[in-house]
Length: 72
Image 1 (cartoon, rainbow, N blue to C red):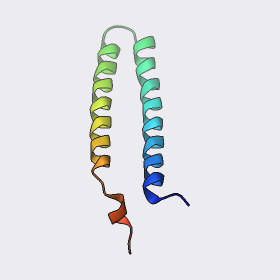
Image 2: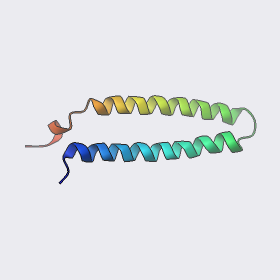
Image 3: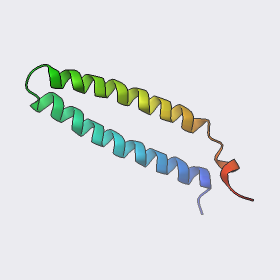
């Protein structure tokens, strides 16, 4: 059986992968099919917010002590 830390890390990696695939789809469609400047600005703001959200999530996830969550 895998240790609990590995299971949580794999689940977090899968969640980030799904999030960034969805973010890429949104960014691609806004920049490729958006008419004018407004969709491109919205895509830039969305990308900046996504980067901040991901960085903050990774930092907070690194500070979680997973072994303390296991009841003994």
